[in-house]
Image (cartoon, rainbow, N blue to C red; front, side, top):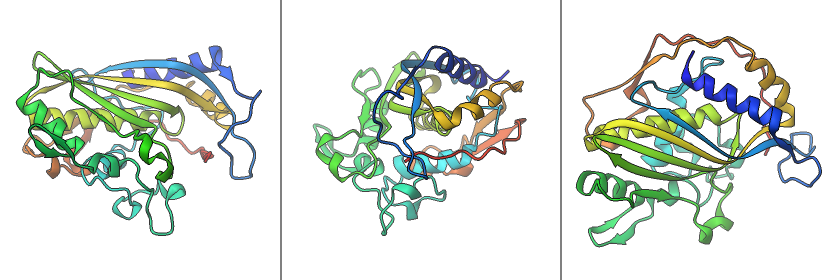
Length: 276
């Protein structure tokens, strides 16, 4: 069994069996028909993945790793806030007529700040510190900028990464305020695990632990039957994910820098309704 499958199944069962429903109050998200999109949730979920042992990819259904990496690079490498720079359509619902999602995600990572070492944006500061000051406990990013929230189409869900070097391993914590377990959980886990692999490689470290901290881990009401059916499937073993070892510059990675071997997964044909 893939470890990612185990974590996903355990988390979903915990939410379904022990979670709290928000049907007693008004909620912001709506379904396409205008109905309120209620959830059942758990607060403060923490999941850990040892990237030195296994890359976390779901086998209960296919994880589209290259699409996930493409979105990640749109944010972290291109530092873009325009969907015209993105291959997938996951952000279409939040973009304006020009393709912009406002001062969100990649925009925030691309803003330069003044440091004693010089002017750098948040990504370049992480790379600089890992290469020059790896013992630092201050290597992190944060895109939840309160000053710009009013100009964001969507407040950041995955908003902060903290990097920490232990021995020769690069570990990281992703802080996420909100997580749609069916639509986004394994997508975010795979893409930020990929980020750890990429940054570890170009800064001279081995991948260590990826820790995913979720404030509000939820399952939408119309997703419950899909989740229940999904977690009853028998998981397969995890695939092998490899990163092109010739790349030593973070800005040279592409979605095709990753190769996947021996990936067996269950077919998934359910249409996932999206709440916005």
